Amino acid sequence: MENANIEVFIGDALVFTDSSGDGSYLAEIELDDHESEELVKVFATSQDDNKIKFASILGPVSSLLEYAGDDGVLDSSDNHSVNISSVSTAIAAIFEAEANKSIESSEDWHSSLKLVDADRAFSVATAIKVFIDYADRGISIPSEVEDTYQFASDFKLSSEYVYLLEVTMNELYREAQEELAQADGLLSLSSGTQASIADIYDLGWGEIKLNEDGTGEYLSDGVAVELSWQESSEGIVLEVDSTFTVSDSTYIDGSYVYFERNRELKKLFWAYDSESQGMLVFEVSDSLRYPGGQLPDSVEKGYWAVSAVRSKGLVNPRDALVLGEVYSMPMPSRAGEVVGATEDYYPDFTTPDFTTNTMEMSFSGDFDEGGVVSVKVPSTSLDGKALETDITATWMLNNSNRLIVNLPDNSQLTYSLLNVVADGVFETSVSERLDDGSYSFWLSNVLLKGNESWSERDVAGIYTYQPTFANPLYSYSFDLSVDGSLVIVNSFDLNKNNEIEDNEYYESPGRWQVGDNGSLFIRRYRSEDGSYCLPSSWEPSDDEGCEVSREREWELHQFVEPNNYWFRQHRNIFRDANELSLPVGTDIGGYILNYGNIYNTHLQKVDERPVVMSE
Image (cartoon, rainbow, N blue to C red; front, side, top):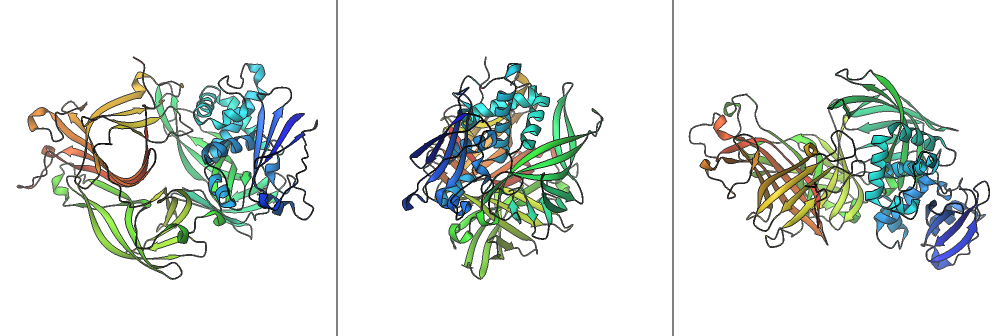
């Protein structure tokens, strides 16, 4: 930014300077020894338009002194964050908004940096560029905020505007994003710090390995792509041996259409990098294919921003897990047993489908040598009751502090603890190598089994999944009333016109109760015509015409004040038992399992429904 007023904060201390006509700036700072852990932030406000406010968050003084070296001068070649841009503004603003605490140490800094979602940051930076560069087209910084920094800080507002730009001005938005990626100085062409480029970057749902010898590998669910990489003046150039398929969808002529992106990785840039966390931006080439022929096949260049935890940024299991405690450990999907089910029960020869994405584990031994894991493998009964089978496995830590669990069936689970979300809650990526050489990944949370259980007195209220930045009009919530009834509310912008219409908003009634085991159970019921109905009681009579259709069991593991609930969810979908050929004497009520799964999840309790349709 040319001719800007620059403010440099070192903790609470403040230094003023200005940028010159070419956008460069210099700030001289005197430091005391006690300031080594203070966080350095830089703000730049345009002298021509004070609604244009950029920022960059450089990190703690101690790391900056290390980057600067003996001459004590820190420039953008030492640390890319010295550059103040729309990209750094988005990162800084999101960091401040999401950290929501005082940063007292380098450990706090690195942990809070993991809360910055790279895709959100790159999208917000693109929106800021659109506001500034296309003002002559009537596009401007939203009037609801004072400046671009406040815009980037506001999750809800920035999400809505990014979505608006993507669905109503997609060509312009993509053009701005490409200009952003190619503009000199906005993205780093190498790691941007003194950290080595060669590393394992854990993406949560996959990983990318860059080896010292220039080879590497991109792994995601069912995908293994060999690659080579090389530094160049245009970023990290990637050569891959194959493409991989990304499923996508769009709305064409009144219909929802699914299509495929055959994606080739071309280049790699950094939006931000530290020794523990990277925000990567891939340049990709997508070959679009529409199986139904709704549009002709085409090739599209694009940019894909992802957050990545470096090897040094992984949480050490020694510092997180307690031996002897019980944890709900996430895992890639695997088939589970439905006890008592046979093909004889089902006239269409479709036996019930039950999958599990979690197993209960308790670790014994020691962190240096490993040890034994007591595992409870979930299964279910024909009527959806949760069951368990006890098995014994082994565990160890590898050289990169990843937790390895070897199961009796010769399968191996590798756990990467990405971040401490709350006491007893750890964001975790877990992978399993499959027989064909590919990998299966699952991104979830490890949950410590606490002493919490649901209290019937306190249950009533609205529970919702956290909003997604990319789709602000999607919501799914549970509105529980004190009388034991509930309403499940679901909304989504199916036709992508930036509005929720009548056919995109659904309410369905149901009932809830706290079970003897302390779990919260939620049920929905269907009438004979297939519509959801509300019976007079938890177990409706046969002549009421309102039968159990779906059930959820929320097994609470952790409650964090004031409104965060982490639990194992056992979800069942039933069929009418009268349709099936049950053996004489089988008594499971009027319903039988058709599909079930179990996984760890998280809900927030809020004061009002995320989406309310006008009358």
